[in-house]
Length: 182
Image (cartoon, rainbow, N blue to C red):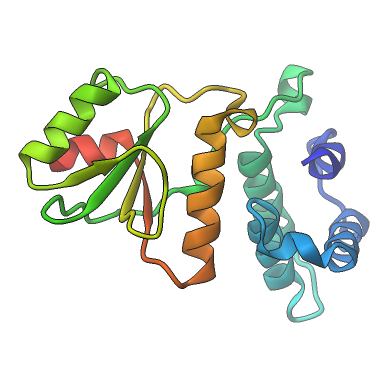
């Protein structure tokens, strides 16, 4: 994330920076399957796929990379890990019956125990860690600004890697999506 933060620190994304990131990711192939580098790699590969990097593509990359890294340095003067928007499933369908839910982070709904109880009352199962049996990772809406450095962040990272592998059907959802399905 340090390289991405450095590229984004002025709030602009130049062709040379996109090509630099592409080259760096190619030279560090082991990161292509690790979150969030796997998402960054895909975004850059898609933008460069036709050999022409348009302003729209650069704007999309800038926005996406900023969301992934949480880098608002040009606005705030501080580089902090933050937004986790790119990991969430868009418009998920939440089915409780016979599905396994893992909760992470702090919840507006209440304690994790209260979230587990609400899930179990609707026929769902709960777990403490992301496993091959996990169907949903629910991320509490009171997310820590240093999420990547915590156990909370490791659950997200593991779930994102599992989902990205295509071998497991795991949805990463917001607390709000989970709560609306109650």
